[in-house]
Length: 266
Ligand SMILES: Cc1cc2nc3c(=O)[nH]c(=O)nc-3n(C[C@H](O)[C@H](O)[C@H](O)COP(=O)(O)O)c2cc1C
Image 1 (cartoon, protein in one colour):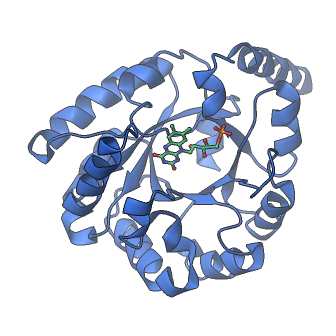
Image 2 (cartoon, protein in one colour):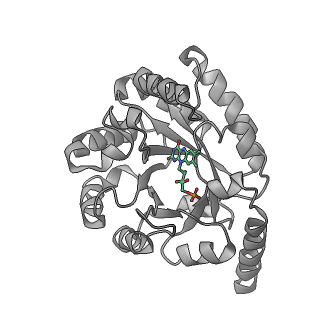
Image 3 (cartoon, protein in one colour):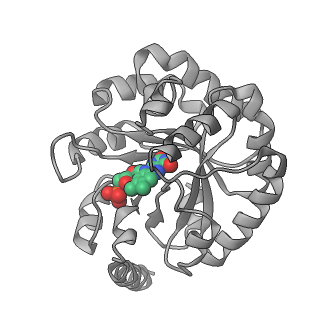
């Protein structure tokens, strides 16, 4: 729970949005978030090609040249540091061997490595990654990725960004329990198919099994009340789309309220 201490009492996290959450975007929010997330970054040629395809059909993605990877990371992280928050990076790759050196570079500059098990774009699913990593048939791949990152000994917490209801909660718990030594936190999008509110039962299931992990709850949090509801079953909450709508004030109020409560308790 070292990560939580280093969030300095701030309980809101900036979630990744491909093509949007770069260093400048993250750095714009000074002293607002506990963690800001860069990415998703593609770490191999297969995922970079997939992103190029997605851009062709109008989706925003981060495209860059691998020759300048370290320089780019250094500059983006420097800009993101203006947020005064921990810096997480959401990553995608299919070939661990090709991604290895780039994960090591990210480990040198970022504070948290977040493996993307969330993306549901067709181009990514075709590679058997993103949310496909949560399926039973891809469990070995997920295990090898996590074990591979762990064995790099980069000494940075490893998180998984996962989407609820891709598999039933019992199945996700069963899969993740077999690899729990390789990760420190779960960033859960409480995606609720066909509903416009988060699946808090799914989050409760994850929280009650993984008591020692840092849990970040995510989905449709746009107010102090939404955040408090989610924090019943998580350590932190994250936000994405509400920032695109400029809804930021409630986060300042939220930080103030919790700082004051902490202050009153000590
Ligand atoms: C434009 C856009 C791009 C996104 N890109 C990523 C991504 O690259 N990686 C990822 O893990 N999640 C990505 N997400 C998902 C968000 O991190 C978040 O889980 C989702 O939007 C639900 O949270 P919200 O209701 O606060 O928006 C993206 C979301 C949006 C809207």
